[in-house]
Image (cartoon, rainbow, N blue to C red; front, side, top):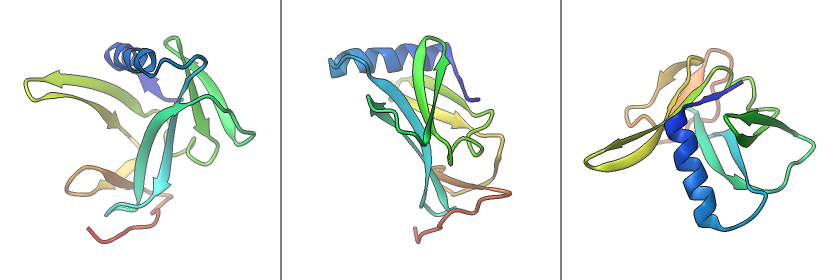
Length: 117
């Protein structure tokens, strides 16, 4: 199960309000790509498929596809604000390597599909 900090939950809820659409859920997943082989994806969705698991985390409905679930086990999503703006951070204890720019990773059991930088 992933963890989402209070700061991230608050920012996600603000973003959902800005979308103005009822019934939105946060979708978190992993796809192949990036220098190290795997990349994170986050967005809003209102459709749950049979390949998804629905989690309730800090008052958010979160969809995670079953293939991404093991890779995202114990991940912490946070939102940090500084003088240059703000952004989400993802701390993944399963990642054994990340690329220099920090946007992709690989795990001990999943190398993904690395691409040229």
